[in-house]
Amino acid sequence: MVQQSTPVTARLPIEGELSSLSRATLWLNSERLTASGLRGKVVLVEFGTYTCINWLRTLPYVRAWAEKYKDDGLVVIQVHAPEYEFEKDLDNVRANLKLLGVDLPIAVDNEHTIWRAFGNQYWPALYFLDGKGHIRHRQFGEGEYAESERVIRELLAEAGTKSRGKENVSVEGQGIEAAADWASLQSPENYLGFERTENFASPGGIADQRHAYTVPARLGLNHWALDGSWTIGKQATALHQANGRLVYRFHARDLHLVMGPPAAGASVRFRVLIDGQPPGAAHGIDVDEQGMGTVTEQRLYQLIRQLRPIPDRLFEIEFLDPGVEVFAFTFG
Image (cartoon, helix red, strand yellow):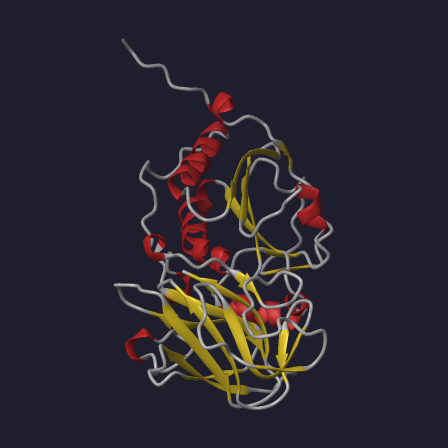
């Protein structure tokens, strides 16, 4: 018996329309793109923001798809929709996306108008559109890369283009873009502002003003504490005096911290310890083997990347200068 294949139109039903891109704050790496101008093209729209580790880990695949299928009619658009106020700063956006090597068309969506038009809720989120501007598939979060590439090929075939081969791209992210070690990952993202933080363990809890915090004798897994003079704000926690510390017990290969200096052009030196010792070979790309590093801009810093086996570890960062703002821990 001959097996009948499922028609593309049945497997990929219409889930919406391409919302107008005209309300972008501005475009980078491209002239302003429009829904009408993209007719006839298969379009992949990805929402991200430059401090999001989950979005960063999708980049190797999205870049590879853009390169492989560009001559077949695929257009890849990055929508940069900020999570933090500092991610609205256009100088920050330009500098960090350039550093990351993102040379795709970028719609800067500072007011989240495109985000709302798509009804989006996630970083990253991928929307796959056919040549008529219909949304035919969605992927929220990391993973499902093989399925996403199959969708691209099917939409190209539907549009009448013979895509380049049936084999999926083979990529391996490097540095901060490397895939998470999911088998050992037991620490979820945690924000450091009072609005969304969890498991704060300094005695007395969160004060509503500048406060001298201390670290308890023992921290449970995924709990954190402060030492020194800090103010815990809505989105971020700010250090007032030098030698303040932040301590976190985690279980993951990688540890990242979103942070920034007190002002543009300023810098804050820091020292990282893991289980009370310099990280050595477990140091991330933003510190050396002795755990030394410097905060020079508002972004995500990779502080720990360790080898297996991965046990519970006690992370400590001491800031040798005042003024740093810390926003969130992420892990991989």
